[in-house]
Length: 336
Image (tube, rainbow, N blue to C red):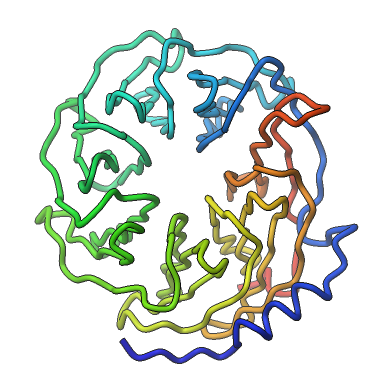
């Protein structure tokens, strides 16, 4: 793979270290929604935009917390789960998909009554979820190396795509039917053909490891991959597989989101920061802010429809677990 890095990792670290962390011009903290009695690690989230609900996979608490965003409070707790790692809301059917890491079970619930309608068993470690609205398929990362495929209309399992190790975050390019998957144990990004249910190619990672979160900018053909060893944001050209740039970030990231309207990348880092990286053009990315949050706050959800970012903050020594709500401010790159 040809590597063309335009900003060195040392240069990025110097820029990050010089930024003022006390205030933010990119993300404004507007609300904190407490989650009393929620213990342990908090994993991924999903949103019901029209219903103004946020669903939070409280992995360490074995629950999914349901938050009324208008009221700014928790209104329901889905219990009896086994390390819920991800949650997916489907507006068309008003259903909720929840993956369970300890059992490998994917539960499909009615999103009004929260009663379980169906269960689909995977080998173990059911993890990230994605939905392709064009094909009405739900994809489930699971086990020692596979992406499971579910027909969202019939609720039946269609097959699997085998991988070299446990898949972490992945993204779907709906236009091309391509899926990009982080496989950290194999130090690779797997590029999949969704229709054929097979691996098309592999991009080896030679300069970093522990590639967990991933985000996609389809308009500029860019893929953003967060790594932990060392902490970097890697920017790839999805057409060639080439590395465009590497940018230093804070440690222990687990979620990365691309804000297309503002041309920004948001990185949630468990070291206690939200890192904001500006996209100057398709080949130039500059760290702009590192916003202090809390230790262990490494999962987030950016909602383009409302320009809001939700950050999951686990229980602290002196504070309950909470969801921090940030509003994204306009930027000089906001206009198309």
